[in-house]
Structure formats: C-alpha cells, structure tokens
Image 1: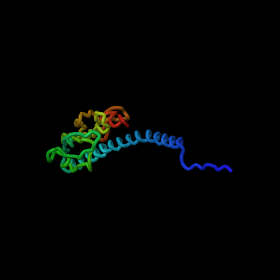
Image 2: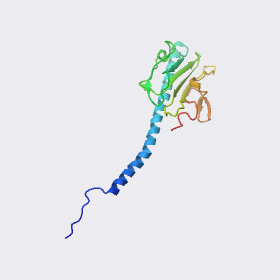
Image 3: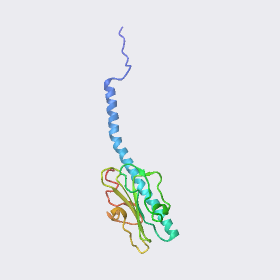
Length: 182
C-alpha cells in the first residue's frame, strides 16, 4: 500500500508569490502615504492662517487697528518641524495678538499691516525640494486697500479664474504651491 504525502508547509513558489504581492502593495502604498503626509503638513498653514486672521480681527475690534508681526520662527525648517519662537518686540508680535501655534511647526509665519488692513503668510519647504511653498491671507481695508503679502507673495491664487486675486480667503500664492509633489 502506498502512503500519500501530506503537505506540511508552503512551497518555495508559494512563498515567492506572497513576497511579490507584498512588494507590489508596498510600492503603491508608500507614495500615497507620503502624499497624505505632505497634505497634512500643508493643512497646518491653512489652520494657523485662519487662527491668525481670527486673532487679528479680534484685536482690531478691541483696539481699532491690526498688528504687524515679523517672521516667526526666524527661519523655516524645511521638512522637519521646529519649535515656534515669536521674534517680534512686545506690541509688535504674535503674543500681542494672543496667538501661538500648538506644538512644533513646519511653517514660518508673518503679518504685514497698515493699521486698517493686514495680510498674513506662511512659508515652508515641507517636501524638501528647495522651493518653499507660500500660503497667504489678505484682509483689505474698508476702502479696499491691500497690504503687500509677506515673503514676496504677489497675491492669493484663485483656481476658478487662474489669477491671484483672492481676498479674505486663505490660499496658495501660486498655483504650484502645495501641489508640486501631491
């Protein structure tokens, strides 16, 4: 009588197929994960610019004008988060607005003001390609005057019209900002 052989393990071919499938899944998942990470880091700028806007409007409602704040932290860190350090003098800084981001930041923030109008911007190189992305917000005066946006931003990009004409809205300073690697 012949005894039948029972399979007690996996064959080499089966193991190679499993390894190949895992490799394919990893090759597709890792780039997607990186894109989601970069989008999440960019969200920091949008949220913080919204908070700066709210702090400026609250300050102006109480004291009658907006506050300019120098670039803080002193440099932007690239793809590594850093501790936020307010670099302005008292009365001319983010602390006078009552604003400070929670935890470490990837972006550098600055506010320009003429008293009755302000603009704020955030700058970082989160993808590490050597080209910073800049996000901004513009609050015109009641007469419609606009303050120059910090970090050389020439306007907030409007994707609907492909121009840099947005006011009272947070957005990228160029169409490519925040989109180059995503």
